[in-house]
Length: 177
Ligand code: NI
Image: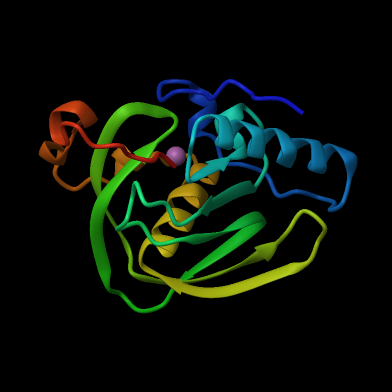
């Protein structure tokens, strides 16, 4: 298992539509998930999508432990989500700051659906079906956008709310997705 280089915005592979995973519980899929987990952990991310390490498959991982350094960040269960389908619950949008391992050192204010149902499978083929809200819903929307070739800056309404972390939030630690 290995820490893999994360592609950065500007790499055309980040703009491609990812393909569905055809079979679960295979050595290739387990190796991909392990590499993604190693990479996310090494970079202290909240989530990672396979296209970010150059693999055009519909696989995302995410998870946030409660961390006293980020007291306002809700814990999100550590999840492997394959072939996801997202369904917004209602029309309510919320704006919050996001970062991304593919857009290092920056943050932007991004609208996301507040309430979300997501379905898919884990790497073994076990079904996942959850209704979530807030930060959990935001992380899932961010990661699944990567599978459609969408990076969060493409969703910022007002680009005045996009900038370098050091300038926007001097002295603060942040987590990236
Ligand atoms: Ni990201």
